Amino acid sequence: VVNSDPHAGNLLCQVRETSARPVLLDFGNCIRLPEAQRLAYCRLLIALSEASVSKAREAMDGIGMVTTQSDRRPERDLEYMLLTFRDTGTKVQQRAERDKFFAMRKKQREEDYADLGATTKAERKKAKEQVLRYPKQVPDEFILFMRMMMLVRGLCTQLDAQLPFLRIFELHARRALIALHPPAR
Image (tube, rainbow, N blue to C red; front, side, top):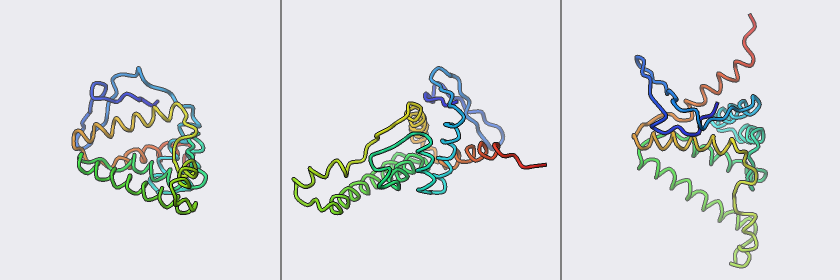
């Protein structure tokens, strides 16, 4: 089940000794993923934790998420997802990391234009379609999944909560995949 509305009014925090667990209160904006999709998201989280371009591309293919650069530059899909799943922190930290990412993207665009030999304004205009990066295929549940992740990130940022964001999700993803093949007794 993916809850795409995890705001403060829909969440509680259950604290036991040294750990805390989120408790969902409202299931009005939830979807149940088919097993193959759920496992593809688990594989994506693991691929991100390993920073594996090939595994991330394979998982995103399984999800059905494709950008204009997925075939030519799959590392850029990984870079974007790693930005989304980076550790949480203060507003200042988050803004600095986001700005660094956008500066890297700008540099990549300039390199792409140079690789295409587009130096004049007219040549750049002609090559723009090959350089731009945008989604070509986005499954509905991916939008809800990303919405949920962004809301949780925003909540952490508002609270200045510094958490290993990806690591938290990755542990559950690994557990789900391991459960597919329990050890023989």
